[in-house]
Length: 330
Image 1 (cartoon, rainbow, N blue to C red):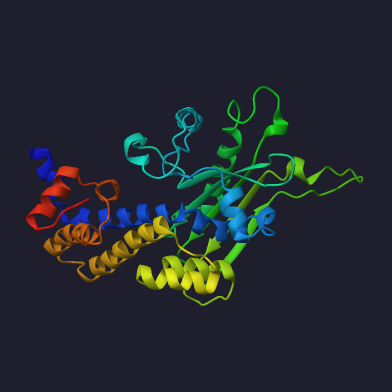
Image 2: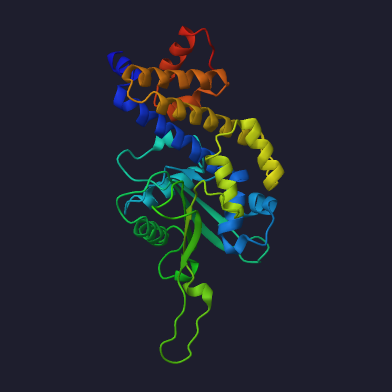
């Protein structure tokens, strides 16, 4: 009981960090939605550009993405992959019970394929969301992640010397900040063939195995479709109703019930981030706001499992908070 009380009232320094982590988790859940993934893949994966959003959503994305649950560390990526594949557990709702504490995980990881080719060509696609400029080279980290996604395929996607079965890897980095002096941009890094001597040529499919895409999203109003799409969802701070309307009008993306629910959670949390920022420097205020955000989620009929998953509060703590404020949690 004492342990629960300690978690119940967050320390001032923890409050902002907890709320920020909660928002990041909700943002990843939004990214994991097929309705949101399809436009991103259409603009970043060259093999998908000729397909409609409906085809990408229905036929290209395999199952649901793993969200923050597959470790990057050598020796652990395949371990978790095999556990998930054998149990056929995919997607949101699995992170809390199977998370590898202390290990770096891929933000979003999923398989995709090109339909109608007669051959099942798979891509292992990783999408990472960054809100701050790190102290190290993000590009080198992207190369490391891509290399891990290639090497970890052994004994999972191919065995022995069947190297022809290696899947192409895309690692897409969505950076919601701009490096100093730069504007919004989308840049691809991939392998190419260079002949120094002679004219030997290899089929592109044999060496075109890694694509790193860096997307920097700012408020500089760049008209590129992908940048407008990402700004609308993650930087506009619209209500979920206004967001759903603009997605439909500007991008032909009609949010279903699941999409609206996840976007509502994210929008509510983004309001909390703004409120948290205004209250910075007031220790008690920051601690109280964390409870207010959970109350706001309860009032918006967010489910108990979602609130528990993203807030770090236990189900008993959330129910007690709801009861104390005359509310019921689903």
